[in-house]
Length: 138
Image (spheres, rainbow, N blue to C red):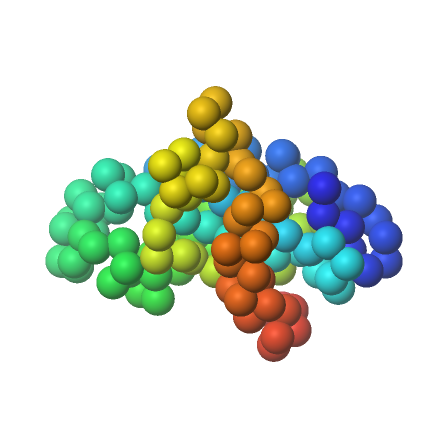
């Protein structure tokens, strides 16, 4: 359970469940333990992104789309919607879209498809650090 530096505990499930409800989101993980704000790692659903991208005249390759302005806008909309369920202090302030999905085969998910938070934090530590390097996005 992420805890902001002010020691307020934030239950990630509310935000994560709402984010995963968006058709382009495969997996996500709220982060922020001992950090000044809540952030999130997001992976894209390769099967959903392909027809979405083609409809917009873009490549359906996930790695090509992580920095795409339209994809970021879609995910920002999903984040904004998820944030409606929590207080401003518990809201996701920044996110990053990863070029890979988390899978059981990759070791990030259990056989019951639950997220292995410690594995994700270890494997994507640089991405988490980058979220906090520039401060919050307002």
